[in-house]
Length: 118
Image (cartoon, rainbow, N blue to C red):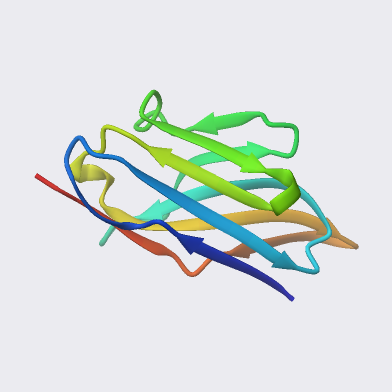
């Protein structure tokens, strides 16, 4: 069983920063990628950033230059540094893990709320 534990969400004023963490534990297998998605009320879940095991990162256009994804392979942990936050960044942020253990597997965290006020 795999668990993803997210932390770091909260309330911040526009222009501020937050750092999200997601730690994976359990029988994970071989990790191929970890990433962050977000879902605002009334919207579909969307990709924020993803990083592969090799360190290659991709970002949504809306967060490029403001957010940075990184990972600690030894700790099976992925981070999302969010700077210059805007009210439109308000959403529940979910961690996603893609791995291979006999078959490809996808796991989601429980989500952490990020609220950016004016």
